[in-house]
Image 1 (spheres, rainbow, N blue to C red):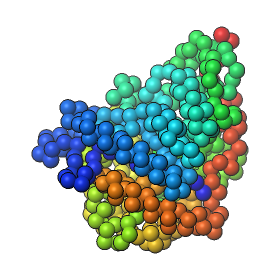
Image 2 (image 1 turned 45 degrees about the vertical axis):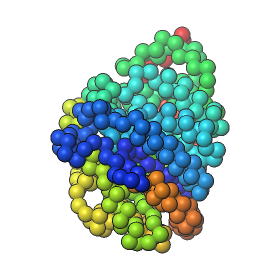
Image 3 (image 1 turned 90 degrees about the vertical axis):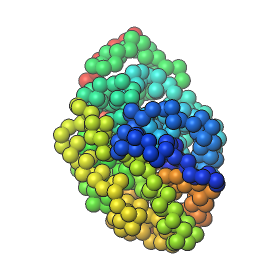
Image 4 (image 1 turned 90 degrees about the horizontal axis):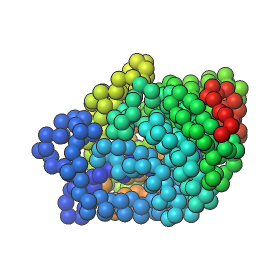
Length: 417
């Protein structure tokens, strides 16, 4: 089983002296949802952001040191809930300051950018510099990403599929050649730098409730990572994936199933519960769920997907720490308590990839490092044993040419240059 580390890199944290918030408590932008898209960047403090970026980089290095297999990187725009503004940029930083961990991009929002060939080139460079450690995860991008990158949400799904096809072809089809699609027109495709991994880096797809994204991942043999969904919802996601995988002509396994969970560890239960208050202090991070016109701009998803997402996110930003712990939305406690809860979840859902968020919200740098260290010392060794007991195969036992087989059915025009 692959065990990964992740943090949203929120622009909120405790210093030793005071609590740092993205903006004052009495600011009118505290109205739910208004901290994303329209919230003014005049509240961005360069000095605090400088400190936070360098603390996060140190925590990534510590995550590798204590034994995590992968570091997950994502991308969001227009709000203090995430300081990872360009997935490829942060991954490039990590390629130079780490040596062993997989660099798990989950992922590049393909529809938000107008040149998939340039994305292919960027990722190829990262794969080379990292010595073949890149996992090129791809996403459609959230609703705010469509608005803040000035792309038409009605074409999001079409652009995602076409950009994926062009990116993979740029990695695998010798150039030069010409691409004429519905959304991308490239008169000459001939990237000089290609990935170190052959035929291309592994591709993962994360998501919450979109059936179309699950189907896309299954059709290509890409692992699908459920993002902190409930146990019941996660099992339904995997059932859907497995059904579509069989239709595509291969037998899926745990290597195709991934899960991202909120997990925090502390030396004592009392401290873990106290830290959980800070962990869950993200009303500004999660507030987009309140504003449906930001999360689901017109045309972004089907009606069914919209309803499924709203149902999946219901209650995410409400309830006490106790409520979140009882529901499984957050696992927090001593190493022994956390291991016991994770064993239950792993036995029931059986993912081949588990990505955990030991630190979030406005936790201090020291508290974050403590959680990461405890993960490495006690939780990770136990999870590896549990993984063996349950027979959870990791994601890198997948025959990658499955993706190329699926590419044979593409409808885009590819001509000699």
